[in-house]
Length: 441
Image 1 (spheres, rainbow, N blue to C red):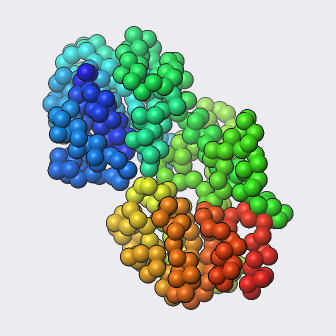
Image 2 (cartoon, one colour; image 1 turned 30 degrees about the vertical axis):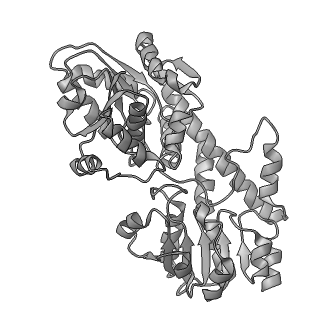
Image 3 (cartoon, one colour; image 1 turned 135 degrees about the vertical axis):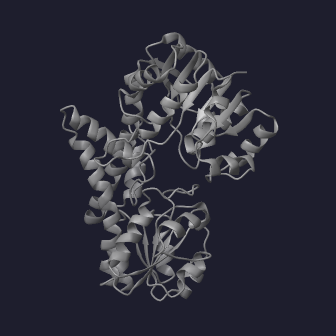
């Protein structure tokens, strides 16, 4: 049993701390947001993440997990301190490290015994050295410590499962003994552990996310070509994926990537590359294609409905992906903003993200369920592929719509079935789009 402190109780911090506690460690989770900490003490989760609430409650009851806003209390017995604070996008696309700096300074000021500082946040290459300098600068008296980079690879919506079943653990440090001690923490997960230097570990995180984003943009560009040439991108992706060199993962065309990681991480990597004199043309293309996928939805709606001013458009799914309430850089809401700017009335429904949307996007008229959402609307845009949407009664949906038009941004539905129900259907990269429209038109 080890004593672990986690700084920050967002997605990464709360999942990391809770899961380490579930492995039998004593964990103190700290956040400077007093309301968030008080809510956690009362069992109120700050995020929607399947399975997390139950694990938090179990470990709080077992006294392996507790919450605080006090650094001195949090670090009193700490052997390992995980920095899991946010690194939002800066003005020019760079990672904003203000919260990392605040955490490092606060740790240094109360540090009174040797400990290992673990950077879990996604941070630019070189941040590990920078954090070490900050801690040394702000220590009241010299106390030995080491810094280890341990980038996270958790996916929102499956973060708990990802923690317990990682593909690999990446550790970077100039202190191999410290890296080995952090590796010991991860041994129960029975996954490959790679130990390298600080900067290489930090780069692995950015390179991984940029590559996954590139796959998404690649298949979306192929989807657009498929539409022009009459091919079906779903079958194209399936055929590609059988090649062991390619695989099937991240080859689903749609409205593009979103969320708190891919958009900002690709931008941050491009920024780092430019600052250091390289020309990241591919990264810029990835970002450009991704943004165009949102616009493609608008173009399809205009092709089917004409002028969107005065039209009522329903958006099915508002979170950036299924199984989360996170609306940061949500493709659905970027589409909603474009529709609103064109004079359309925008409606929306999501199983988890409605409260966040109500606060941040007051122009979106929220419906109680998908059937209320469809009432008297001119078109439905499928933006987030929640499982519960797959079983909707589409005859009932079509029966209450003003016009039976669907733009399926996730290729969630069977086009032939919708055609039989009288829908005009447009998917993404489906070669029969035009033929279906003519048949129904």
